[in-house]
Length: 195
Image (cartoon, rainbow, N blue to C red):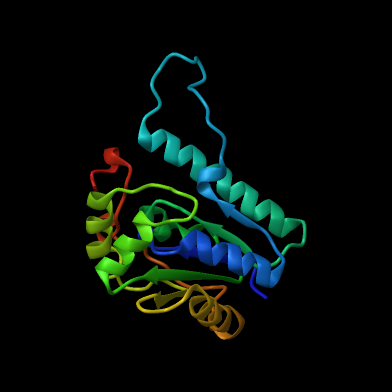
């Protein structure tokens, strides 16, 4: 059992599908950063920037994840973070037994079709996908991060591969970590200058 399971990857690659399957498999908790409620600035007048909104959602998600762990839950699933936040996971969750699963699809057309034909709808942004498709798979893996290529795989096959990694993948609790340069990551928050 892990403390946390993080699922990251490009839009439309199957993060939510996998998270729901992992949730059912382990009977735990899953939290998407997008589950944070809508809000205004404190004075209710100023426009909320994408960077402020993402920071607020990230910090609230971290609190939720850690609170479920404190309550005794294991295999708490976190997903739907801005890719730039991936580099924060080893820093914020050092000392916890966590695994990050980076989903990629080495077949762009498959990833595009998955994005366009999502059952629950969702974001369809081909410009976003093209840029994420180039950047996310090319980045070196971080501490406790494993990659699954979903190319030509059914959701059930991806789940089986993920469960094998979760149950038997080696993870470190204590490590030296130098945060990689932000230019190695993709950000859909325009103000980060990485989109």
